[in-house]
Length: 149
Image 1 (cartoon, rainbow, N blue to C red):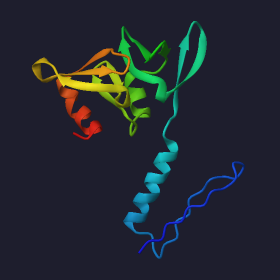
Image 2 (spheres, rainbow, N blue to C red):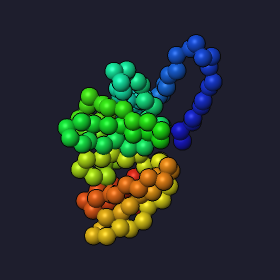
Image 3 (cartoon, rainbow, N blue to C red):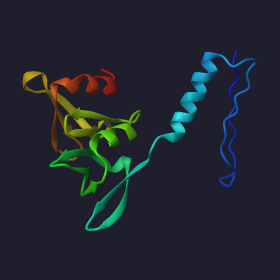
């Protein structure tokens, strides 16, 4: 039986996780890997607008789109340009609620209000701001996986 203990500490103290075990098993290694990966998850991206540099919180992003060799980050009320390529952003956001929904777009799954089937095996996502995004047929499995369907 494994005993789990959680202690609250002062905000000035450094948070830590200590694993006490009889031996380092594959399960312990997997747990360590998951803990380290959760620490490394990004919380924001950098974008520019009008020669100003902004930190954009992931929770505020609706989708990211590449068009005409430029990458744009769209929020509910604003948009920003990113210096990164779409595939670079996709790598940064791996393991988050963002997923590739078409060749030129990454969508934030938590900003989807609902999805419905569209023509030719595609799906249409209606976002929380009422915007409609088409999910290409080849990326529908990504949608189903991230939504757990």
